[in-house]
Image (cartoon, rainbow over all chains, first blue to last red; front, top):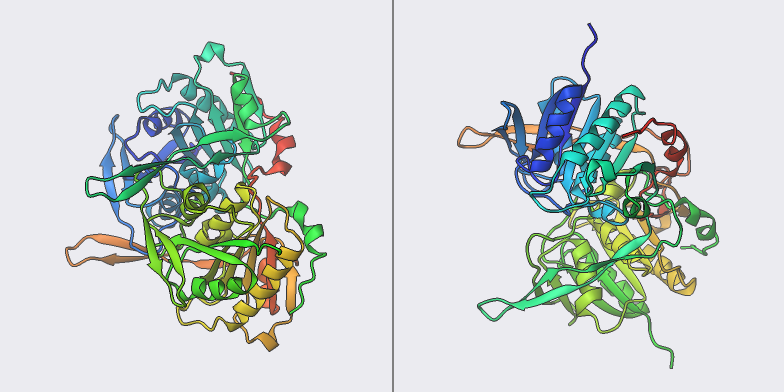
Length: 257
Length: 257
């Protein structure tokens, strides 16, 4: 008898978010699943890990009779604790999401969802992060589920390479309005700093981070363009942070001590 | 009269850590400085940003009669708040560090120090992160200061390109034992998950993240090799997370909805 693949699922919106529960539903059709996710929202946590305080693990009963592990840490912590301590069997695939909100362009760097997937890839386990381009808690996840099913199936059938990490962004459209799936690169862009300055009841200033996204990428083929054109975007994500194209010019610096 | 360059300084060890105070001393010789740094240790924070709670800014008197801004947030928050709200004049260069501990190989991803620098590069400001390969609070910073002086001077003279971000790691050696400065790429490697399981006074388990670094890179020219050979390592850091070499094989996937 063929063993079903073992799929570890995490996210950054917390173990009880609708997005992860929808992903669990899809993945359960395709493999044996384990769920290890943060006990609270960890959006914008980037690839943070917890080193200054200890981590705790709580069993959490989920809808559908499943049990997950909730961790008082970051998405990357969850993957580390799962593979290092909690799971008896190494996962064949790690999934993160479905995130409530897009993770395109530079948001890939700030994303907690992606950090769980990237941590998987660092550990040589194929990993995929899923994000729906709608940040509402109540967003309709039916399209995202259909897309996730196709991509997870193909990932298992293609025997995704060990160190590979994919960033999947899904437009907020009905399934019959989706034009297809495109392989893309990360668009160049940034958030302009907007801060909402307020005064608390005690007369002290505080700031909410806001800001608007500015797309600076002039060329096609990016995650943002795919989404805007009604396509699912699939971007392979690196764990090598080197900007290789800068190496030649740097070698010309005079760096003598 | 030539205007002195404006240098913004941040870090991840907190505004009162010896590392940042040493970097402030060196940078003050070379430009007009502003200091915006976390009010507490933010090691391992990756590229986290604070979106679920507001940020506060406190003026902090530093040794030498300087005033800095302390923020109750992450290193990336500090750079965003500095450029978005606190500074009247845009910085010409952003420095982060000097970190107490190496930021080589995959630690580049977990590093808060690097995230302040990478955030600067995202904002099109040349940025450099400095790390000393000694995590002790009391580490001797004299070599690191000498190295930082050479690199900052050259960065200002070379007119570092706007989106460039450098990761500088400095061996923990006396200056006369340093062999020089090498331009490198990030070494392939990972931390093996080790967790120290303990039981609190109330009978509940908790875990400290530990682990050992495993170098999997077989080739030369990496940050780790440079440090081991007694050289300062200078690695250019990317904000494009796309793993471009994966694009061709992914295009062969059957991704039909």
